[in-house]
Length: 51
Image (tube, rainbow, N blue to C red; front, top):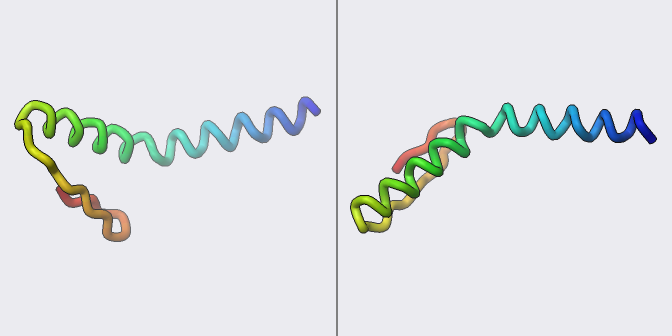
């Protein structure tokens, strides 16, 4: 049981690390929409994000 819990924890940490940059960019985009009072569209193409 402990081994299973450790595997889940390490996998969670790996996913967090992989998506940290994307999450930060999306949060920044959301703040920009609030400041500019406009709607922004985020487009994903492979590893590129376009606003």
